[in-house]
Image (cartoon, rainbow, N blue to C red; front, side, top):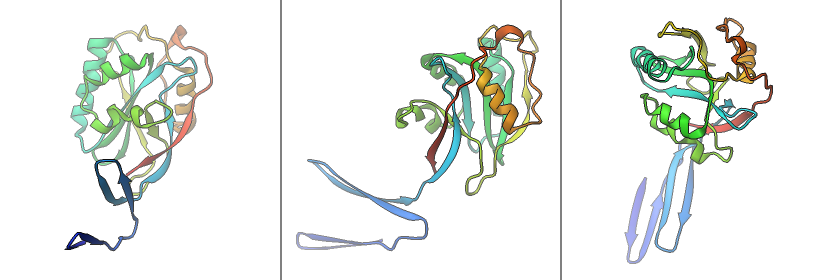
Length: 201
């Protein structure tokens, strides 16, 4: 990028690279121009349930698997959460899914026990749907999430939390190798959930 100033005139010369774009912002006090890579549009599933609660979704980037396992252990021991579903998106990148249902405030409190990507923590504030989303398909540089295993470190009876039947059914359809724990009578027997398209780097 080349910037030239002559008198009161400033000239910015920038050759956009492949996949780059720009954004210009102007307010009463300042003017700004940003150059960045075009975001990808990917499809994912929302944390929100039919009765306006949320399941707990966790997103880890550049993180050792031992950190993820310790987070899950803490959540299960300290908060009585059910078995967790572990997925890998690429080397050292993971998704974790708990099917227990919680309020948005409870979800954010639970996330504070973890070492998830900081951008994921407050991502609902940047979404008009106000929910957390994990992708289902491919994106550039990363394949479709791969189911690894169920994490049930606490080895105790199944949780007393209500379980989202719709999310359980979605996971079964997309990842047929999953063998779910026996949630007995704790499932909510609801069927609707939201699939969303969203921007990612």
